[in-house]
Length: 332
Ligand code: UGA
Ligand code: MN
Image (cartoon, rainbow, N blue to C red; front, side, top):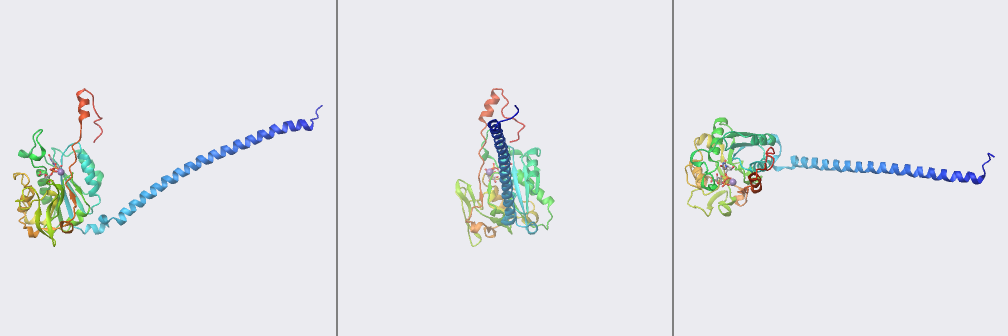
């Protein structure tokens, strides 16, 4: 008989109900899975956006609040700082120049004159200058004659960066109009520069000066000042020099070099330690003419840091074994 009893109905109904319940829960859990992965994705997106927002805020803060880089229009009114950097090829060259360019990027109205001690300008330096976006002039001149360092000779035995600084001075004298307001500074590639150094030197009328840290075997060395003038010099080495200071210790007004002393140059013939004093003597200045900077020379604005020579021991071992060493197509 086709008649289905109540009991039989119940028997069918229960599995159907169970099946439907299962389907419902399966559906729900799928929905939840979708939801939770969507939620995770959204959270990830929000995190990413927040990161970007904080980066943008940082950038905005930099351009609005940065004392060193106020407004470009205001910057154009400032005297230009001509920052002369001799540089030569060694393992740490790119690192030193990158660090320096990162500093100089914070300085308005600065013209970086980079002079390579090399027979040709290298693409390493060229690319670095281009990427920096800084106003720069890329020159080269190879160190000549007596100043060329012999193989394995200690570095301090010969003056360094002399021909390169003179090449930059020659470039300045040929290329800059006489009416131009500016300041010239010899900034080596491995020193550390406080950003305040630039605002201090920018107002140099004749020659300005400040102490340099970590040089001459001392914590710092340089002028001792009072009332904006140099009273005496603090140095341990050859105090008989008229201006016993490091190259990083002074800046010179552009006109003094282009108009008043158009032949003044770093003299490679002088004895060790006499480059600076000899150059300043050529400018016919007296100690009384020097403008003291850095809160009467009480503040360190530049450190004569020296980058450690890179250790290539393992590269050499590999090469001795006839192995190629690290990938030379990677520019270090
Ligand atoms: C110290 C001073 O800080 C220099 O200003 C001064 O020229 C030098 O002594 C000296 O008496 O000749 P220091 O740290 O001992 O400098 O020398 P480096 O930093 O090795 O060289 C000074 C500059 O010349 C650097 O910018 C460097 O890249 C460059 N240089 C060095 C060359 O262009 N060619 C070289 O063969 C060596
Ligand atoms: Mn140095």
